[in-house]
Structure formats: C-alpha cells, structure tokens
Length: 413
Image (cartoon, rainbow, N blue to C red; front, side, top):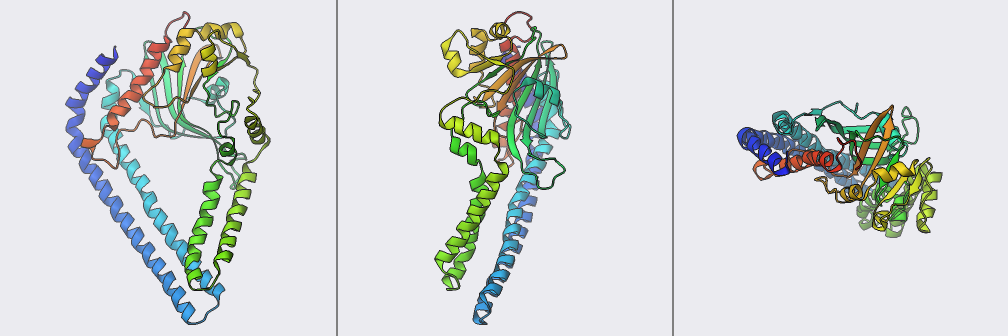
C-alpha cells in the first residue's frame, strides 16, 4: 500500500472511531490533572510549613544565643525534609502522565494499529520480544547487564516478520545483587529486528559517526569523560551554598568559609563519582579522541572500504567477509540508509546484518532520548494535541524500511 493510501485508511478510522472518543478522553485527562494539582499543592503546603518551622527555629535560636552547631543541625534537618517533600510533589506529575497515557492506549491504540494490518502492541514488563542472543550477535552494543523496555510491537508485513522494542540498556559495573551499583548508560532508543530473506553468512556492521559502543571517535572527549558527574555532584554543592545564605547574613559564618565548605563537598563528590565509573576503556577512548585517533575494534570484523568515497565519510563498515559486505552494502542501499529519516527524528543510527542459528537477520538501531510511541501529551488538551499523528508516522516508518530495503527479496540490495 502506498503512503497516501495508508494515511487515507488511517484518517478514515480516525474520523469514524477515534475522534468521537476525544470528549471522553479529555474528561479523563482533566480529572487526572485535577488530582495531580491537588496532590502537588498539598505537598508544597506541607513543605512550606516545615521550612517556616526551620526559619522560626533559626531566628529563635539566635535570640537565645544557642551554639551555631545546634542551630545549623536543626536548620539543615528541617530544610532537607522540606526540599525532599517539594521534589516529591513535582515527581507525582510523571505518575499522572503515565496514567493518562495508559488511558489513551486502552481506548485508541488497537484502533490505530488496525489500520496497519498484522501488528500487535506488547506489554511484557521488561521481558522483551527481542532476546539477548540477537543483541549480542548483532555486535551493536557494548556490555550491559540491565535492560529496561517500554513499548514493544510485533508484526508481519510483506511476508517479513519484524519486532520493535523501545529499550534502555545499562551497565551497573557490578553484580546486580550489590546494593551499591551505579548505572552507566549503554543505549537508549529503538531496536528494530527484521527477518531477512537475503543469504547472510557473516556479520556486517554499519555505523554512522555516532556510536555508543565507544569504538568510534568521541566528538566531545571532556563531556564523554565527565558525563553527568558535574550535574550530580556540583548540584548538591550549590544547594548547600544556598542553605548557607541566612547564616552568612546573620554573621554566623563567613562567605569564604561557606564557599570553601561547598566547594569541598562538590569536589569530593565529583572525585568519588568519576573514580567509581572510571575504567581502562574509558581512559583509552578519552586519550584516543584527544589525538583524533580511532579506537581499534575488539571484534573479529575488519573495516570495509567502499567504492564510493562519500559513503566512507558517512559510514564505517565492518565485516568478517569483505565480499559479502560489498554485496550487501551497494550504493543504492547506502543511499537509502543515509536518507532514512524516519518519524523518530534522529540521524544517530547503525545496523547489522548477521546470521543466528541459520536465520538471516537485520537489526537497525536508532538512538534517541525522546519518549516514543506515545499517543498524547498530558499537558495539552487532546483537541490541540497532534501526538497521535506522530505515533502514526513512527509506525509507518517501520513499514517504509521494509519497502525501501526490499527485505522480502532474495536478490541483492
């Protein structure tokens, strides 16, 4: 079916079966929003009361000439409780938004998927429909030992079975039973797995300039080394400095002393955070990026130099079979891959042709930090929300991949 024909079918179902439900859905959204605002305001009110108590203790203690240590102890304790409650108030919004999105999926998801034919939404509670054997055999991911999945789909189109998984992969760096684990992100985005009728015997990996496996150049070596450590460690130092402000005005502590203590806390936290994540691979990739050198792959694939120099600049191709790699990576295929700008709005992609237990597979990976496959925005009235059309484009792009790459053909790409 052409794109125009597919959209016409979707639009017909939308007008006949989905749009009439908008009134009921908007009432549900407003009800959930009202519940969230009520809960948030209660949390903030309690937070303000506790913070006011801490200020009263501070002022009263100063007038009674109590020791600075005692004053600071009480003030920090009550202020910390107040801040924790205030943060919890806004965290409740995520729970309410999830509740609204589940309402949308219950009411209209099946109706939308019906327009695409044989495709089903799965809710497997982190038991993904793409097993780890495929992830490891593809050669697209670094080591991970924890996996978080969200929306997943399974279907068939033009006799090609496909699986889609919105996935986050992380490496805790330690055994999962260890309570002191710290998560290192490996991947976040969409994994697409297709059956491939083309005969694939070796593994061929195609990557763009982006690669989270840490085997290509790092665009910003300093950011790659520090990651989010500055945010997680210097943030508390800034909060500590803010808490010191009333003590500075009351001449209970000098600005220099408050700044020094906050700086020490931030620097200590930064050091601990970096050292807990630092390893030989991180240092090796960091140094290699400084000298603009590509990190050598720790895999059995060799780099493939394609005939067209522009594709060699756009992609890095690795394969254990040079002949088969060139058979797969034709000029037409590389053009299609480069121009594959799906509704996921990302150019950070890579793919792998491989063989698993005698079956040829193609895995395409799209990295994005956005929430995908959503049907609505909790912050917008549904009559003003176009998210449902974005969902349509995301699903339709999967079918375009099968058409564009001719996966059901047994001939060359």
